Length: 220
Figure (spheres, rainbow, N blue to C red):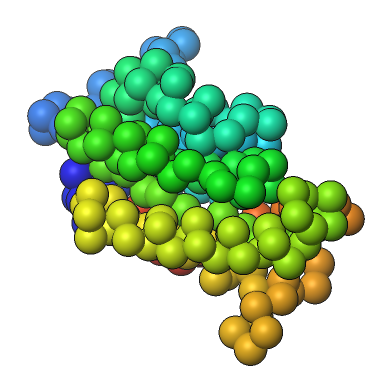
């Protein structure tokens, strides 16, 4: 399902919920108790590490968010549970953000696990949005802050290539959080550890993810 198709599904769900189907006439008497109406919202699974775990579902009110973020995991660990935690939910789409721990903890992070997840989603016919990882300026990372920034840029270049090699949709989270000139994070978007996002950071990062899902840039 393309981003446009997902947008159609979202819009169609709200239309059906508001207008009903089948052309039935209204009851002449309101019943004493009204049964709850199941949600018609499309399900979107967010999977990744602690940054994914922190996504506020309120930033995506048009969909039912299933959050499968696990703090501390790298892309290999996320791939090991990708089918069970994401694809088996039969969602309208999956949003994957993986790599922060890979580039923080290793001098030679392996991108192949992200490619494997892209292939699995494609085989299952589930639209996949892969987000670039946020900027990292952590002096405690392997090799220091400059080295981890360089690895992060390389990782995100690989993410962007996935739209051509694996047919995924890429959400430019990194670009939403840094200034164009010097690539430094905007003030207030990161927590003091210079890795995790603040509420302001998530609000900025949600814009490219929403657009990748076929939603308006900001909730109406």
